[in-house]
Image (tube, rainbow, N blue to C red; front, side, top):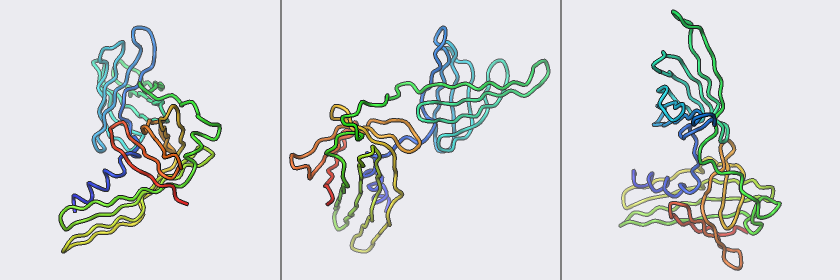
Length: 238
């Protein structure tokens, strides 16, 4: 069973989008400005604030998707923080309660994700390579000994620059076991192409580079190769 779960997750990896706070964000300023680095493990959020390239405060807390909150500790005292990401922008609010010889404070700042992919230039006004505007399906069959698994994924590129991706029914079985799942949750967002590269932005997130794409002369088959080297064939659905 664990093998089945692993393979299902592998097949969908090409369209798995970042959905948490993890990353490095910067606010330009004198002597390097302010940098925030977040790591996410499960729901545990950790990080650091650097000012001028030097550690200023440690961040610990909890994360849920693109939001998080917790405690900020520096040599000057302890406070709190709230964070949320919209696209490539990190909204960070630092707070400090009143105490002996200190005032209550609240500081909202906005930082930009380092290495963010700018909105790519369109190959066509419709949102990308017009040959891709269609409904596509990818079917996979994996066998090992007496066990086999069949999966189906669907992908729709629309002329208005939006896409829809999801998994169809998956089945697996062997000599003494069987497994079946229904349709997976669909993902949607925007798509674009530039110089043979496919880019996508989920409904709430930043532009991501999916990888290279190519197509047969008759347009019936498309191959997408991710930056990790994974290749997947898609057939145009009539």
